[in-house]
Image (tube, rainbow, N blue to C red):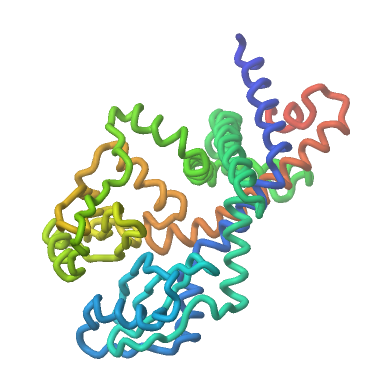
Length: 381
């Protein structure tokens, strides 16, 4: 197969995939930009809602915080404790998550030094409601499981679109020309130059975000495949506790000591509480070297005997686990701190630029008699 014929095939693939996924890619990209600083914006709003927290020495013990919230749900026998998020900073509250028949995720914000419940996420506001819609639109197109699969397919096609764009980039023949925009040229040439420069600058990052999104949305297929390709053994389902008749679960303070001893240099970020007698107690830690906000190191304990059922040190995990753990910083742009997060805000706008300029080129192609249209007139010059 000649180079010209191969290039025409790649170009055709690039063009029709762009036309097929363009609108959804624009939607996913723009909402992705909005979500980059979602946590910080919501945190500021939450501080405004619950008031400022002035550090006052050491925070209250975790059991004290939990018992305070338990007492608030004493008249709701169906309510159960799901999770506890510990404050990452001295001026942040504890977040104690409860579930009831009416609501399966109630976040209760507790003052870390006084134990006072400052508020909860049931007190809705415009900002949080806006981000919830943006999040659902980004991941599921507001269409539930069907939308989740559609965005996953778009993620895979977006990878192909980015790779074919890299192949077609004219800078492979002349590097400087590949990054140059001739602003004083014909409008169609300017349009093409914007497309080629924006595409090549964002291509690698678009591949990362599209690919990680695809893998998440089709995790039932991609996760085993990643473990197989990295020659890593996939962990079994979550470990289970062994209920002992007449024996109640151990005190949390004792379980906490056991878990912390497994990762003495790590900071505890959250605790998942058993919803059933056979469930394990999970402690999530963050090691100093980890970039993920809540860490990827876990300790699972039997809630009755306190036996360590599983222990995951994120820095010593298998290659497959490390690949999967890298998806979050790569998708959200947190791997390089603030600079890469700002970059990701800009990247979210790129699909809009590429789809608009690509559509203009496609439309112009059919206004010419040449079978290769715009590409012959400008790219092959």
